[in-house]
Length: 404
Image (cartoon, rainbow, N blue to C red):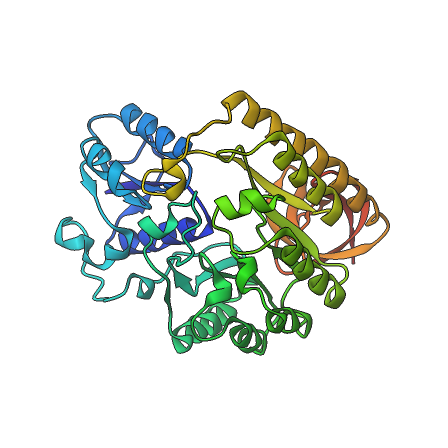
């Protein structure tokens, strides 16, 4: 049987899809294009309402002679409708039991779906250390679709991490909805993985400001293997909106964390997540978010327009910022971010940077620097770390010349 996997959402979902792929390939099936596949597996994400709309459209356009499985993050309110559109709706955490409903799958003989190894290719590997979330931000569906926080045992993580290093992966991401609240100590885990012998980088996501401690900063600063990159979502630059979002920190407290990070790691690349158009967000609230962007000068920001999600507390609020206004605010922030990022990237011209090639494009390779900047370099070499001199930049990328 030929199968195809369509994945929506974060790196955690991407990693889940690789576990699905490994299970199906272990059962003798082959991944192929959607057009050639007999079976379509859709790994969904309920965080954004627009994603669910896209899934509805995708399912309606799939040929009726194909079997469709839906899995991933799905809110209870949407399960009933979506289950009527597909052949099977399965929980991703119940992956070891899928064979009971699908006779063409082998029994993986695993109790925990984390024990099913992810299918991996390329130089980058993702390693979940936990799943679920206890924070209940008022806009977010994750606690309702992923459940409460559940951390993996440190010994299981270390065993998998060491295996990835031996297999030759050069960049390993530690994943979780909130890695900072890892039950057995995230700073300690960072120290242990970075002590593993080998030539590799460590990255992690996602972080929550309320759990981002000085101990974590020290762990990052003390290891050459932990890259100088941090995504720390602020979501809004206005205290009133943060309270409505149930984000338990103030702008002042957030800025204090950023100052502590930059004091220990002055040249760190910083990114953030921002939501515009949250219910009740005024023009003044929005201007405060613009101000925080100017002040902190992020290298990147992932800007989303608020979308109501069933079950969340914000769903009870009036979605009173128009679609047009949300789009305008997102565009304004993006334009500001481009100017800031371009000015920061310009300072890199003439510097030699280390990077990891990730894909080919014509006679070039495109990769990520150690500080998570995208770089394009004329090269045919795709193995291992390389060095390049930065010769040109734009807002979100660098152009380099290979250094021997």
